[in-house]
Image (cartoon, rainbow, N blue to C red; front, side, top):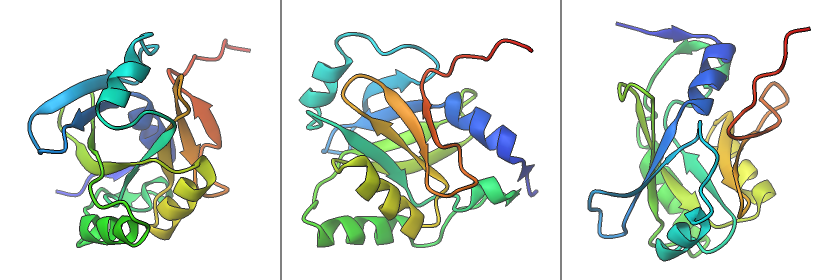
Length: 163
């Protein structure tokens, strides 16, 4: 079965995601962050305990080009390509992060990249991704990689009042 999506549904799914951070030993999730909720004051400390003391991006190689519409799909070899690109820049043991849908039916594996936002956006664009999650030290954002992307949207997203 092929599931076709629209850009609006993809963006809503991004906003409804829970990020699961795993310890470097590959064990169970060490931290879950529901992007629909405001971050707790202690989140920065907990991320630091995982080896992420400052700003970072969550980048995946899964499901490239989702905003263009079409079928949800894996990117064959994408995870290995992402790790190779990071290794070439000296990141040999990145923190693993999975983006999980609210109902748990969709999961995309990614990595935490402790780079400035612009560099992380360039990396994601090289992997044909439409966006990244970016932690600025206080909150998460969705940051688009292409002109048709969402721009820079703070999370949790506030619904705009009807006009």
